[in-house]
Length: 301
Image (cartoon, rainbow, N blue to C red; front, side):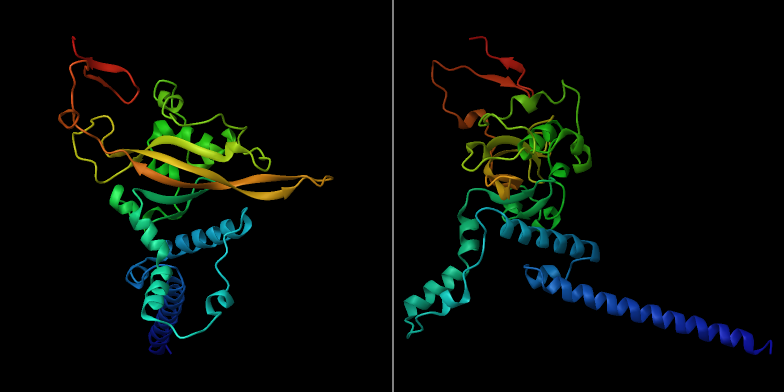
C-alpha cells in the first residue's frame, strides 16, 4: 500500500547504512592490525591514517626484498645462535644482552648524522628517526616518499645521476630538469664524487665505482629564517655511501654481474657558521659566494 512504501524505503536505507558501517568497522580493524605489524612504536602506529599505513607497509616489504636480494644479504642472526650455550647468566651478561638488543638504536644515536636507503626508483625505503634532529622532518613522513620531493630542484639531476636513474625515467621518478643556469650546481656540488658508469649499467664484482660521495641540499624545518635568502628552508648535506647491488648471471655465460638496487648512505649536515666564529689571521681575507659559486662580495685587501 502507499503507506507501507516509505516504511520499506526507510528500512532499506537503515540496512544499507548498517552494512556500510559494518564494512568500515572491519576495514578499520584490518588497517589497525596491519599498522601493529609495522616495526614502529605503538604510539606512532596508532595515529597513522590509512594512506600512511599502506605507504609504510609497501616500503617495508620493498626494504625486506632490498635486504635479502642484495649482495651480501642482510639476514638476522638465527635463533639457535642466540639460544646456544644456555648457562646461568650473570648480571653483567644480562646487561650486555639487553644492550645488544638495542645496539642499532644506540649506533644511530651516536652517529653525527642520519642513515637512509634509497631505491633505484628514488624512494626512501628506510631513513633513521634521527633525521628529525638534523632536518626537523619525521621518519614516517619520509619513508616511502620520493627523495626528489625533499631535495633542492637544482640538485635533482645530481641525485638522479648518483642513483643511476636513466634520463627517460627521471620525470617518472619526480626528478625536475632545470635550465643550465639554474642547475649549474649539479656539476660543482659533487666535491667528493668519482667518475660514474653509464646510468643503471651493470657493475662487475669488485667495481670501485659503487662508492658514492656528494653534496646536496635537503629541505629542513630547522633552518633559521634570513640566514641564507636564496636557500631558505634547505640544509647542505654531505652524503657518503655505496650502491647496493644484486648478483645476476650473464645469459650464456658463467660470469656474473651486479645489478644496482639502490643507495645505502650516511648523511652529515653542514652547519652554517658565521664569520665571527672563524679566527681571522693577518694573511686572510673574506669573500662571499652564492649557491652557484659566483662571488658576491670580496674584501679590498
